[in-house]
Image 1 (cartoon, one colour):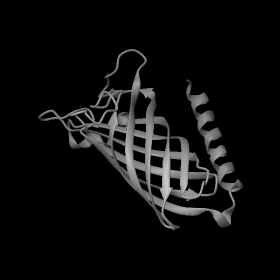
Image 2 (cartoon, rainbow, N blue to C red):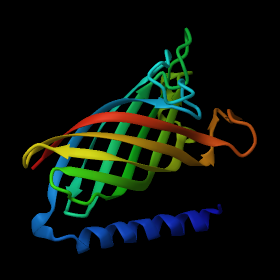
Image 3 (spheres, rainbow, N blue to C red):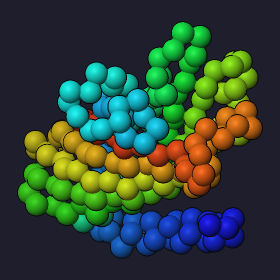
Length: 199
């Protein structure tokens, strides 16, 4: 995908998000914040499969916030996974994601299944020096898709579980060395549980 097509796709996504938010009834939209905890699997993650028996789970935790109407919602999500590439003496690695997601989340009483898709930043870090955190080569433009269910107990509290897949648009490189062969990008899945506070 060329840079021009990538930029065009990004602006089309932004336009769709704005349209979604403006067509939702403003009086019915509610803000929410949702801290989560889970683990990554598949692709470049330590756990190769989604399984409760995986002994090499690395925690992924973060928070999302946004606005939710009766059918659509928008969220910003920040998440962090330490030791993403595994634990090795003298090596510190992590992945940070910052994604903007549009959600289709119909209201079925207190039960709200949803699907989502979005774009944003996937920041990888492998510690060689403290300055690596500021290395632009570690920043990747990426996308995510997923789905789950939100169960609300009253007007202001609920729980949520979801499954998401993250993928970068760019090849994954660290210090000029491509870590994946061929045309592979950094990718992984995440399963998480969360609480939801509506206001």
